[in-house]
Image (tube, rainbow, N blue to C red):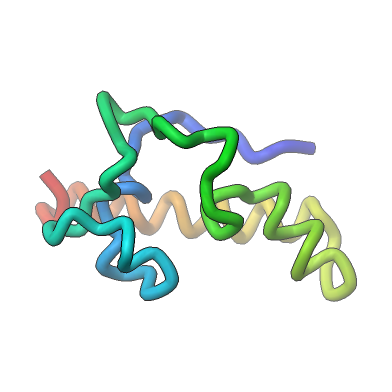
Length: 89
């Protein structure tokens, strides 16, 4: 099972909501490494940006990978809804 990322870039445009990534914020909530909705440091991206690594490092003992992926899918949907409401352009 894997996380079905659509590569919309919305999570990378809302860094102001993720304190652990504040150093990557351009000052407008957008990640400095996002270009054309793609991560320019994808292979070396922070662990919080990598669903598989986050699961392996922090959540594998408390839930199944399927549960963790489902939680991330729901979070992605909420980000998309937030964006549609006009919070991210």
